[in-house]
Image 1 (cartoon, rainbow, N blue to C red):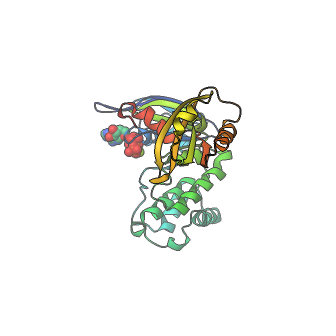
Image 2 (cartoon, rainbow, N blue to C red; image 1 turned 90 degrees about the horizontal axis):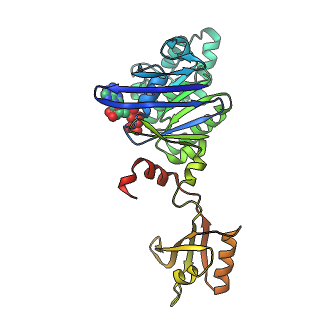
Image 3 (cartoon, rainbow, N blue to C red; image 1 turned 45 degrees about the vertical axis):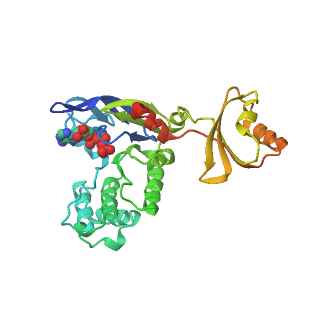
Length: 318
Ligand SMILES: Nc1ncnc2c1ncn2[C@@H]1O[C@H](COP(=O)(O)OP(=O)(O)OP(=O)(O)O)[C@@H](O)[C@H]1O
Ligand SMILES: [Mg+2]
C-alpha cells in the first residue's frame, strides 16, 4: 500500500502542501481532486520521490521514499503532469530506453515494449520522433512508460489530459483493468472520471485535505441529493407549485422555469421532508389524477461538481 504521512512542502513563503496524510490500499483507485494550484502535483511529486518533502514522508509498500528512495521508486509507475518525455527520441527508442533503465533486456525487453506499444495504441507512430507527435500521442507515450514495468503502485497526474474521447475511454478501461492488483492515485479535473473509475476521492484545497470519501458519499453531500426533478407540460390556469405544496411529504417546490427554453414544459425541483418509500411513483400517480402530463421525472443523486464547488469555493456561491 501507499502510506502518506504528514507531507508538507514549502516553496519559500508559500506552503504548497500542508500536512497531508492518507493511505491507499491495493485494489483502491484514489481520485485526487482540487482547484488549480491546490497542491496535487506537488504531493504526487513528493510521493514519487521527485521532490524532497519539507516535512513528512511516504511509504511505498513499506519503503520510505526519502530514506530508501531507489527501492521505493522501483515499484512505482509515475505519469507526471504535461507528459515530459525526451523530444528528440523516437517512440520506440524512448520506450526501449525506459525498459532498459527499468532493468529489462533481450527478448523480455522486446516483448514488453511491443506489448505496451500495442496496448497504448502507438503502433502507427513507433518510429516518429516525440517532438513531432500531437499532444494526445505524447500523453500516450508517457502513459506507456508509467505502466511498462507493471508496477504495483501507480501515481498518475491527469492521465487523460489532452486525450480524445475514444482514448479517454481506453485509458479509463485500462485503469479499471489494472485496478485489482494495484494501488493507484489519479489526479483529474474531470469529475465524471472520478465517478467512472475511483473507489475513493480526496479533495484538496490550499494544500490541505478538505474531503476524503467515496464518490457516492460525496455526492450525498450535495444540496440536490434526493430532490425530485419534475418536468410538466404547461397548463393554462394551473399553479403547479401551489398544488404540489399541499402534498404532505413535499417540503418545498422550486420553479426552475421553462425547460431548455421550451415554454411548453415547466421544470420543478421538489424537496421532500419525509418521503414515502417510492416518492417518484406517488408523485407520478398524483400528477395523473390531476390530469397533468409528466414529461420527465427523476430523483437526483447529487452532483460532484456542485459538492466540489461547495467545498473548495464556498464563498463564491453557485
Ligand atoms: N517549483 C515550485 N516553486 C515555487 N512554487 C511552486 C513550485 N511548484 C509548485 N509551486 C506552487 O505550489 C502550489 C501548488 O501547485 P501544484 O502544481 O501542486 O498544484 P496542482 O494542484 O497540481 O494544480 P493544477 O490543477 O493546476 O495542476 C502553487 O501555488 C504553485 O504555484
Ligand atoms: Mg497539477
